[in-house]
Image: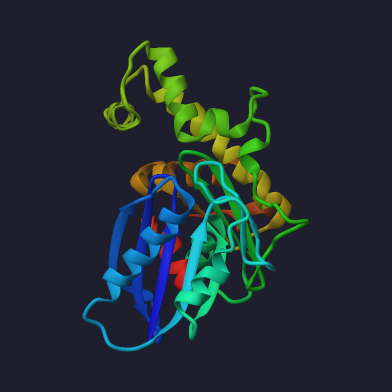
Length: 286
């Protein structure tokens, strides 16, 4: 019995195959480019699934999709996507036609990544926040085993304000951080190159990275005061590739809890356990 999962991004589709009895273990994985036409994007996903199933016996019992954008979960529609072509696209219905005997699940990519991190820790009742720092910034909260959805579109903290008055995402997501570093150094380097210089204690780069870390740590500090989660996971491309950065931000957050009656709030910030596979694993575990 097989589970097919896919994490749909603006540039690539990440697909995986796992067994029903062990959905968190991805047996096969592959990536394909994300076509920019509605039908061809769906066809690319099905083609990828077929390749994963080649040579395997047994039925598909679950198909799980994590993807960005505005979703109508009740109707199974992908309403709108910023960097992908689906508009009011009946994704669940179309997948059900291809896999008539399977359960079909659709969820936002942020929710699937959070679900993977929550369940890999064997959490069931805990309060948990997943914060992704990558091309953009967003977060997801799970409480008592359920996604906190608010009035419908939660977690858009990238559009909260930073200490400079700019959007948090504009100064702390990857493109924003890169723009700041390039502006202050007058150098057209890449983000990995700037991080490499940070690790070498470059005097020009270190204070800029530290300021960026403080912005993130202060936001996390407010989350902990507001919600008191058991764990906050820092994920996304930047954090997954820079465990030292996660450790330093965690230490900063702990420093902010200087009052003795807040001692128990320290140690809440952790790195992702699933890294880049968080979305695929979380989708399979829906």
